[in-house]
Amino acid sequence: MIGKKDARKIVNFVKKQTKADQVEVSILNHEQALTRFANNYIHQNVSESNSSISIRVVFGKKLGIASTNSLELKKIRETVAWAEKIAHFQKENDDFVSLPKTKQGDYRAIGTHAKSTEAFSEGDRARAVGVIVDIARQNDLNAFGSVSKGTAEICIGNSLGTFAYSVCGDVFSNIVMSTSNSTGYAQIGARDVREVDFRRLAEVAARKALMSKDPVEVSPGRYTTIFEPLAASEFLDYMSFYAFNGKMFQEERSYLTGKLGSKIIDERIIVIDDPFTKRGFSFPFDFEGVSKKRLVLINDGIAKNVVYDSLAAHKEKKKSTGHALGAPNPFGPVPLNIVMKPGKKTVDEMIRETDKGILVTRFHYTNVLDPHKLTFTGMTRDGTFLIEKGKVIKGVKNLRFTENIIEVLNRVHSISNRPELVAGDPGYGPRFATGTIVPAIKVNDFTFTSGTDF
Image (cartoon, rainbow, N blue to C red):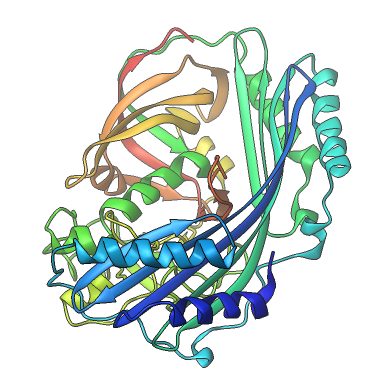
């Protein structure tokens, strides 16, 4: 981490190195550490720190972008020169109007960093794994997974006066518990490690593995299906990328093109992009330095809004909604703080009211077949169960499916009263926590197309 003062110095240095009409500087410094375990033993303990500076220059309507992972002034100067050279060879972008112009008062003060997470050491991670492994051994199971933490320092500045700076941190853990022929899964992410109960997380994964031991086959077909938050979040995540995306909306590739103001899904569904909710990964600005705001996307099943970065917004003579993912970004703007409002049923009530159905923990290897229609495919994983006469009676072998998200969300039977934060897996890139807050969803006639051997 270099601090706000030195970040501002870099931004000012870049401004002085170019004669471009406008210039934008994006600085991302991150540190992360991970402890991974398998077969009840820690087998990997790693840490990483890296820096990235991306420079975007504007000459009229020609844009050039170049990046470096060096903080040396000489390298930054070279990167400015590369960005200028790239801009020289670009065609004019008729949709470009200007980089965003913001004021310091635009940004809301929110908590994005916890000292307890920063102090969460390799020894603390090892002790957390010890708790997880103890639960596994008590139940004659093998445990696999990881415990990690990370901190990101983000600064966006430009020649129009925009200067946005924040430091954010998070902790993430995922656990797979396994028997000889079944698995159970649980995960959690949080800003503050004190909110993470590793024992409870391990107990959930262990219970699912034991409940699904010796799974039986069920025939493909349509079933009343209850999706726990891990699975339900994928419906909204795909809508975020392919429906709420302002660029796709303009290009008529979004399902919502021509449908804003119309009812598209069940009237009980309310979806909001809320970057300030304390339950999620709050953050004050996007990757162009535009302040974030709470935005209703679906209200009572009616499509209300899509999201914009500055380029997409200017095309419609609108203001950015604060959803830029940074430059270059050919994909378009995406909401990263989705919240779905809860319903009135508990998950236990949803199960008790099901005569015959399937309970799904999570999906695996999902892919979109038709982005415009929002048809997707995948399979269940790590805890799929048969419900009969209001009780979960046994595990079933995993099932493959092909379904349409919009049609599924029009067949909602009930929504649980307890939404959960489903954190995005940090993966292998720069650390920046995102997550979807979603309740469990019970759906009529979900189509499973085939089974698997496991």
